[in-house]
Amino acid sequence: MSTIKNIAVLTSGGDAPGMNAGIRAVVRTGIYHGLNVFGIRHGYDGLVSGDIISMDAKSVANIIQRGGTILKTARSEEFKTYEGRKKAYENVKSLNIDALVVIGGDGTFTGAAKFIEEFDIPIIGMPGTIDNDLAGTDFTIGYDTAINTVVDAVDKIRDTAESHDRVFIIEVMGRDSGLIALRSGISTGAEAVLIPELEVDYDAIMKRLDKSRKNKSSRIIIVAEGDKEGGLVVADKIKSNFPNYDVRVSILGHIQRGGKPSCMDRVLASRLGVGAVEGLLEGRRGEMAGLISGNVTFTPFSKAIKHINKINTDLTRIVEILSL
Image (tube, rainbow, N blue to C red):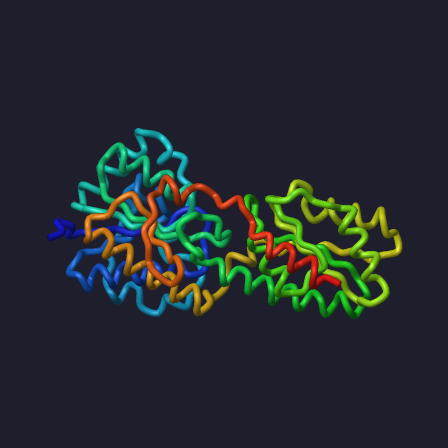
């Protein structure tokens, strides 16, 4: 029988649509199992400063459809130090908090793993990042919403591109991962997708643009922000090869992090929130709750925080085939 009576939840790192659905699921699952639930504001910074509030079912009412995170999020420099983590632990013990659920990405889990190592507190993670770059889950919370936001924006941009016979370079988020760029590129019919995992073949891109010149009134190239050269440099290269092209750059930026979470993200966050709390009650710690082939699974932080560097070559081949 579990000795856990009090748990707390926090969101850390970059915000992702669906985090609120995850918070809601953790709070209500905790209450369902007779636990007292606390919310930690501003991520690990709040854990260090003691910005911790009691939560009940009403405190998470009407948030499942909201983007962002009601608990706020931040990156904490103080938590990276032993002294900061010791303060955090003292705050946890002062409220008799027995275990934590942390929602975030690899930085969040790295901090959680260190906290467990030093102070032996049970922690389960939930993958909240739009990049979808964590091992141990097919999809991360926020990824589906982010790519749908990109698709909606690119569809609108293509209307302008076709009206003016323009080439649009669209830069999307993905400092270390090109999955947003790749999937949104396929779904919007992009002529090329540039991602940090693969070397850019500019000769092939120029040939593709030249070939499409006669039968296309618009051309879209999607660039992940993590690409070594970025959207502006790519645009300059195209202009130098095709001086007569009307080339424009659109950087989507933080619009990709906002907005109402999609149905998929709401359901994913809800399932993982339930799984995280029940995982703690089963005695799990130092693991991330993820969804693989439709089933909730648990992956040690040490494996989950390793970014996925291998790109499915079927997806890159699809871009090439369908760009004709």
